[in-house]
Amino acid sequence: MADNYVILDGLGNSRNFKATENNEVLTTHHYIDGTFSSITVDADITQKIIVTTAGSPVQGPSKTNDGGWILKASPLNSGVARYMFHGQSASNKGFPLSSGDICLFNGSNLSQLDFDADTDGSIIWATKC
Image 1 (tube, rainbow, N blue to C red):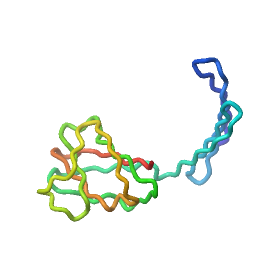
Image 2: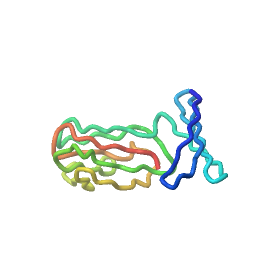
Image 3: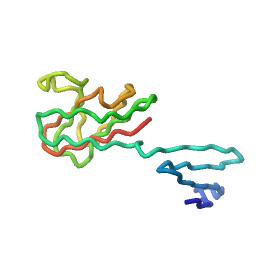
Image 4: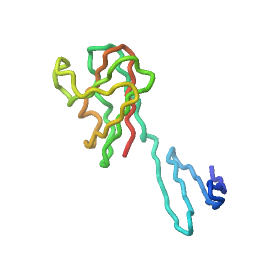
């Protein structure tokens, strides 16, 4: 894929945009006010963590990012989701994330965390910072 776009912002300024895709890596090139910037997004940018059974913590996937992770409880969750350091007792309950809450995990590997929730099927999204 190699598409070029011209986007008009609300002020009438044109912004050139080019996207290329190679081996599941998406790179966007932006030309804004004569300045070039490039953002590369890999296939692992976002991880979906599902707590299948409430009260039974699941370990995060072994995905790494030196910049840390943004954790977000799905807005569709009906209860509170929690994250804790791997191996902590579930009775400790961990750090709460209510529906739609966001927090920053400054660790590099999601497998350092366990996830639990009040309700079965709760979802926590983890996105690379």
